[in-house]
Amino acid sequence: MSTPERRLEELGLKLPAPTKLPDGLHIPFEFVNVRGDRALFSGHPKNAMDGSLAGPFGVVGAEMTTDQAYAEAREVALTVLANLKAEIGELSRIVGWVRVFGMVTSAPGYADQHVVVNGFSDLIIEVFGPDIGRHARSAIGVSGLPLGFAMEIEGEVMISA
Image 1 (spheres, rainbow, N blue to C red):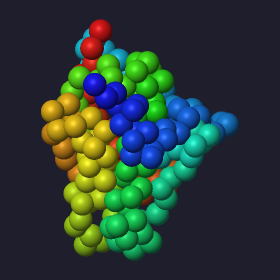
Image 2 (cartoon, rainbow, N blue to C red):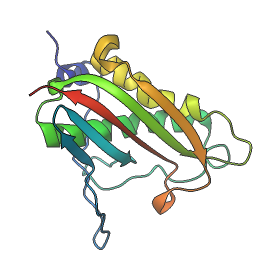
Image 3 (cartoon, rainbow, N blue to C red):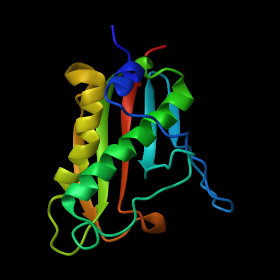
């Protein structure tokens, strides 16, 4: 049976290092919070391969196209997987994706946030398959996100002991 890590390799994808906050940035919460058989992940931007915050930055529908934002959402998924893996050990401990919530910094009148966040959802289903990877999801447009991020994605997974 293939593991999520093996599937990432098959897709030619590599996880970045877990998130490293810039000096002086304090957050009073965890990126991943394990509670019993659930792991909740806070709003994530994407990481560079060294774990530093790498955006994406800007406004979708003005400074970034839907296609560019879709690709960035796939990168956010890799960051989420890196932080989940750092917290729970092996990604095969994820036995179900429960929900995903995507926030997209959007130009006035932009209405394709759902297409942007499909980048995240599509990657999760490619890696975990339709049974484990299926999830409930919402995507909304916002006027701004911390540090100028173009998107943040949060959610919840079920994990095995």
